[in-house]
Length: 158
Image (cartoon, rainbow, N blue to C red):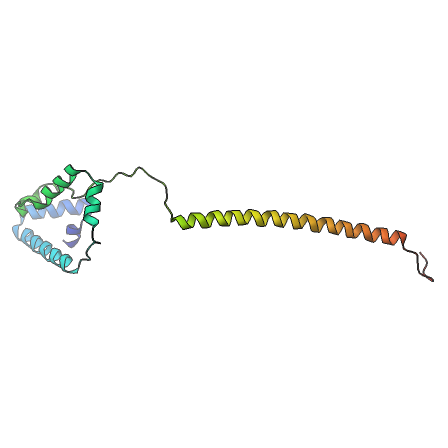
C-alpha cells in the first residue's frame, strides 16, 4: 500500500488495489490512515525549500495554472470518493525550448585560453622540429665538406 501511495506500482497492481478499495471499507480506512501517517512523517522530516522558491516558480508559470493548482489542493472532498475516481495529476507541465548546455562563464574563458595555448605550442613545436631538422641537415653537410677538404694526416692512406 505504501508503494501505491507513492505511485510506484504497476498498472495491474493499481487496478487490483483500487478494486479492493472499492469493495472493502476496512482496507480503505487502513489506506487513509497509512496516508495520514506518511503525510505526517514527511511533514516532520521534510527539508524546507530555499526561501523565495515559491515566488520564483509562480513567476515562471501563468496565473490560471496557479489558481487551478490552489483549487485542487484546497478542496475538501470526501477521501473515499476521491479514491474511487480517476486520480488527477497534481503537477505542472513544463516545456523547455532551450536544449543547450550552460556552463559557468569562467569555464568558457579557461577553454579559450587552453585552445589558444595549444595552438601556440603546436606552432612552436613545428618550428623547432623543422629548425632541428634543418640543423641536422646543416651538420651533415658540414661534416661531408670537412671530410672532403681536410688534409689527410701523415701516415694515413685513403
